[in-house]
Length: 314
Image 1 (cartoon, rainbow, N blue to C red):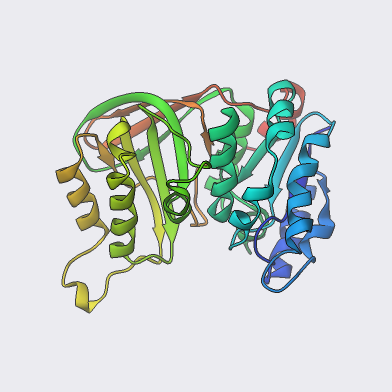
Image 2: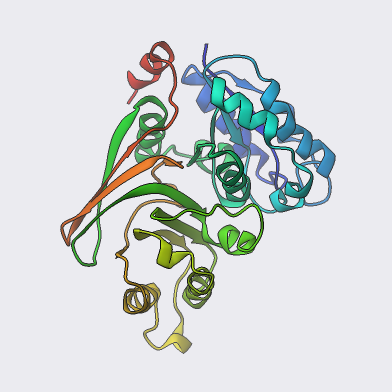
């Protein structure tokens, strides 16, 4: 029977009500939630000591059940404190035999990139317990796209985007931009050529978004990709000082400096409305100058029996 296994590798969940609401919502949908004790665990700003949070990650390889979804309670900060001492080999080995469906975003991006770099291990960049499933009202778009990603071996997402018409095929990867910038130059950053890089962030002014993207550009990462997709940048409003400078200005600059397509408008990130992307999967991108489509394949999914229980609710 499919179930969800919680981990808490980053910040303490200050909104306990949201976390428990998320547990109730998932269990009401027929998905038992294990390891709930991590929700209340706390040390300073973190969801427990470094050893406790690292233990959550190391214990994943010992999960023997089939159809297990692994999800952080929330993001925040704390993941990069653990990576130096994390041994990914047992989890990578388990993923080759009977993959866990590991889903999260934000601070969790650092672990997802490490797994992709060390073992070409696929994970999902998507909703988490407190912020998404624990929202006062569950976003139907997010719910539908989450189950689509975890139950369909091949699926397509579509959205409206500006930019020139283009086609591209390659490995879909990325996640939170600040985390990608923070691990650039470390052994945890995947070396992906010909990929489709998708990025998002929260509480970053447009100039900070630009600065981090230019850091990836200066490191040679952007030029090696087939396409760059800009997702949601929550709370990235310009101010009077910007005098018209905005996220659109950032996209325009990137298009001037890069020889690859730069697409915008994908609902992906910290917003309540978000798609779920399999990081490390194969992507086929098509854009006609107005509408973009990204076809995804090659990612792990729930067994057909488990999938049937949830696809009926979509």
